Length: 131
Image 1 (cartoon, rainbow, N blue to C red):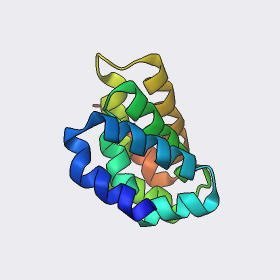
Image 2: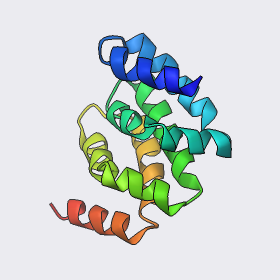
Image 3: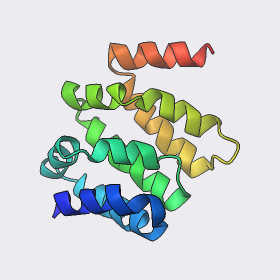
Image 4: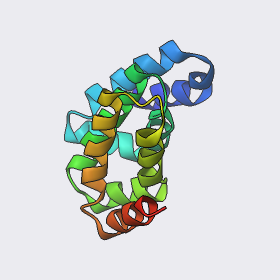
């Protein structure tokens, strides 16, 4: 179940890249349904996924994909959760990193497109873009 995967990802993920890869795949699959998106956003997965966006491509792209799915419904509480957890800044960090691949960049920009539909997300993107 989701809570167990989140606990495992939080506790063992930093030391185990194969666990991050597996968990990111599980989260991405879950994010395909409204029930899964609701669970992921309420169980603390967003913070983990944002941290993993700078990881190896397999983990990062699935993490971004999951975040895109969670934000795709444009529900204010989910978007605010991501913005409060500095998702816009994280996107800029990943996109401008020298090791950013095209697949990671494209996934990151899809999330940015969703987040900037909210005024706060657009404001943060404009401020970061001017720096």
